[in-house]
Length: 295
Image (cartoon, rainbow, N blue to C red; front, side):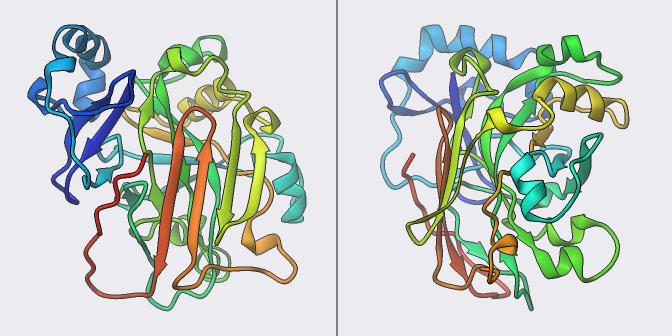
């Protein structure tokens, strides 16, 4: 299944993409795609409902803003330096264990929302990543059973303000958690539609120029290892998102460094999971997200 959420910011409703490609309103199912949904066997119940009722639901008309396909997770856990080429380009040693940092759940955004630069930002960077959505409570999980806890996958762009992250002391979360710094989607895809999540092409371009191009086959730590490892330090709740790291090609590592500026357009995608597009906007205290329906 492919799940979407649509509507204005903070008012998103549940939807689905049918096999023929039509986007439908699934809000009559009566639940959002959140922690409670996943924790109450929501995926199985939604499948049963969809088999009978989905084709009769209203089709979504353009324009309809797509929000993040998962309602705000309890946490976004990120894995750093998880591609060999990315570790090399940053001049850091390959990690012996997964590098964990957190991204505020308030950073979530829709896949086509504008990215408004944080106040006084000067080094906004991009990072295309595979996101793994947790389907049930996970604590002290054995690596051999870890894939049983995967509800599905989605595209994540781990935007970063490098000056906040690396030049202001403390932990990386300061440079990772601005509003809009975790666009997700366009849709959430269940594992049955992704034969091998460890062999997916992923890419990112800025103003039409390819900056990142790789495969999840190049990850240092695979999904089972990551889930097991993280679950030994914190309980993963249903609907939590693990962002599994980015390949080489980030702006910080270029010579000279290339950071995002107002007017830039960032496009990215992962095989089987769709593509995103963000227009970079200057800092402003309040902003309105323009509806952008493309999937």
